[in-house]
Length: 582
View 1: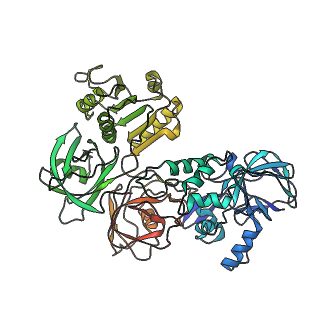
View 2: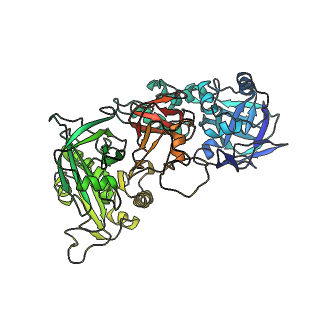
């Protein structure tokens, strides 16, 4: 039976000094309520990235689960809508209701599409930050309805099952397949045969069954790569420092004893620890690998930044024979095996990982249609011109197009040094006729990535076939948090801690840990280091980050462990000095 229909419009609430826009506060409706395709009249979602839409139009939770949590948590203060549900029902338990089941309530018809998505806001609503994890661990997530027929419903209506979902997989089972350890492939493949399962969950399950065998971690929640070849940092010898353009120089590295080095995946990066000043702590920076991923050695190509301590040191003070501390190749921005066309698109020094991918394709004498699209200011600013031409020449189906935004009148010649004067744009992509079934890889400045990604999608390339790599810290994910002015990463306010050093490699910041902080995520936020998170309780893996060096201790054990070499920063603290890929 339907006990309560609950609705609520999004509002701003204060949480930990920040403003959260959320629709999780629901109140019972008196009388009939009209169910629409996207929600119930009077209802709304604050974060449409994680909630709402046709596949998550109506959220259902059970009175039996209310009573379970009251007993477990020792609480008696729950009211209808407390878990953010639209429909509070008697019956329909998560371990019996199946994805694809259909129900008629009042004059509306519904279909079960997916379990609840873990989210920190249920912890806010219940004043218990453990709730996102507890809902998964105790197999009581609740579930979403798709509205197949709009209509009117009211408290007291009978809930009539009208059809069984195919495969007969329950909400609790499907939820556990994604979030809990194990992930049996045969069960995941069964879930993928359910047409009603929402596209987001289908995408997660496809990633889980297709991940490379050598990887660890949960590919359904975060991109995964093979474990790092070694832990922490090891010394490598500089064998050459070579200019590539007016602002870019390459540094070649090899094993000091002449042994082969573990081969990276094409597109990965290296993290180096440098000591420009013996009186100051070392600086840690990450640079994309630009050489052939064959294990013969490593090459990083570094742009000289106007006030870059690390880049200035590498350009001017590093010489063949020097030893540099290096962490193992990392990163999930890698060339994927396929037979489809491939677009390698770069801006400026963003050509570095693209070049590594081009080396890999050339070594395979790939039959793929390969497009090399490179943007630079002018000929002096364009790196790897001769090198890329030689590699493209061995590929039977390669095309190249170079864009100069400001070609030099007397030095850069159209048709020889570049192909188009101007920027890489939607019109340019359409004029070139880039294949819409291609896998696209982009690297360059943030604005370049935003503009070119949008142009590719408008040109017809599917958004899920566009992969990007950014310079420095990546964009944050802070669902529902009201936008604030961005600040450059900085030490946290207040008295400095006296604990182990925490280095944020992409942000170029090292600060001491202070006792009293709850997690590495909290420290990163205090430093305005861009972070990604959702549940904040060790379930969703949105915060999963590369642990380049050091060890952590978990305050709450992850529901499913992260990949080898990674850490969930939402629930961990440093055991000693650590270096994070943030």
